[in-house]
Length: 277
Image (tube, rainbow, N blue to C red; front, side, top):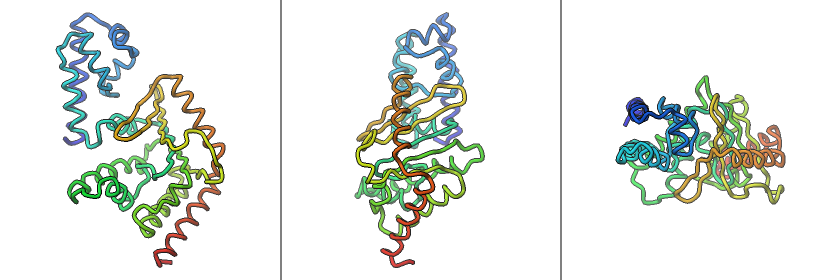
């Protein structure tokens, strides 16, 4: 399903939600109370600004006695997403965010990946994948990277563990180009990057990727990911705790200037290994 068609489908979801809610004689706040979200969130669902998670769609069906229609719509729309179900909501929110902060313990974040690096990551995850399937995955990843090329792009900050620089995904040539790309993003002031060196030792959120997203007029969210699963959190206490952890990560990481030197030095090392200096 094309992006325009998918958005139109979510708008239908929102219109139908509003119609059913009003037929039941409920305000947005009334329905929000019954499904454990704010009335403002219900309004954003109705305007297709944000998409409910599955459990919320199921509770809406229960509150409005709609015989599972919103769950079925949700499953159909998520099935047509270009991303895995557990990441689909986070990908949608990326496009709406005014600020994105990430911590990457082992792999370059998707928004910063080159095509060759993304291909190596996907192939490492599924060495028996067909070229057609790989191309589909790569296209989805590259579509996401265009977000940082947009004039209205979000403020972007990432802390990369030094392991990200040292794990030779795709081989030395691919890594050299990937790190050159990171350096270019920093020099163009498209992204602020910091490297958390091995020497830093123990640090907050060890081994756990995180993505914090801020929005113009809606609460911030945190996305974390594990094996074939992801969590999108917007509970204020959890978001605040994650923000504190991220601030500590930034405090113990190298400065952006030192990090740029580390990234460019690692790229040069890979070029020497590839014999392309």
